[in-house]
Length: 415
Image (cartoon, rainbow, N blue to C red; front, top):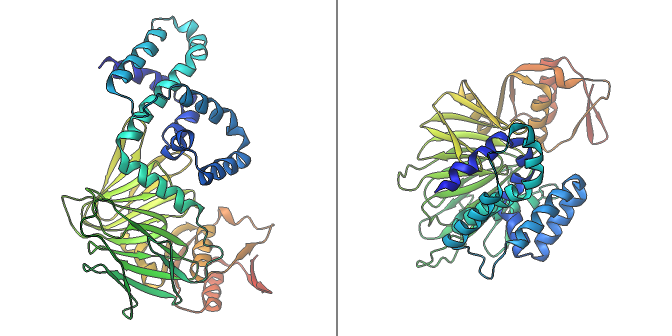
């Protein structure tokens, strides 16, 4: 179709104009809210606008356009799409001279935005699986670990199963049972003929860790401060899980069913067939990194027009910077990035603040920084044994950094 030929240049030459709108257009949760608002989605977006008032005009414009093109049947037919594209493209005169380019973009920007919206809606209704995963990401986003003291396994019924051990082990069996710490067994009733996946959540608070064996035999080690959503039983073509935090994956090989790890960042995911890798994707960090120890993975940057894939080999680290939205790959000793599963923390020329955050998560403590201390510019190398008590670990940290740490009431002060 001629639409692709005419559509691409507008996106390529005007990325700064399109970008503020496209992040919402790509968000199925946003589009779903416009067409099918619920009390929960209303609360979410109202709260979002209160926190981000500068986005109100953009959201208002998109809402107007979306509602304007809504038909009796939300699933647009191919004929309707082609006719709408024809009308839009007739209005877009690409032969205008460069000197009039700005006025052209200003005059017809809404038509360009409408073109993006229409294509996004088409993708939205066709790809039901993607809609489900994005809804799950939003569900995970609103869950807070701040008030949780025990690890929680939340079943499809919404009922949480509390686990008070610092390190928990959970296994999903082929028979449909869930075994916790080799002692407790949870009977999970699964319909053998069901076609849609049902999802469970595993919430690992600060100061805890967990190891879970999924229904396909894949093993996932979850670090402190991690939220994880996974199917009770994999039934779809892709084995998709959602992660917020840090985890080490040992994926069971299955060429017919790729294993996908989605993060809270819509533009970043990991695709694997069978491999071992570590991924750190804490929402508070400015980056997501993936270290591969065995096999091969695709680091996927999900764009509106296409997905960019970077193939990672064993011994490589891929770092995706959230602000810049780009991936950097370098050679590393990937094994060192998995030592946290053994209670060890290894770092090479790493920011002191990053090391402190890891210690805070592992021990569930708060380390405050002296206002006079510019800790962000310091980088350190070394290793800490997190199996030690907190006092010993902080003593070792002071030896490595030359900083002092004082305890005042229940808080630790770095100075």
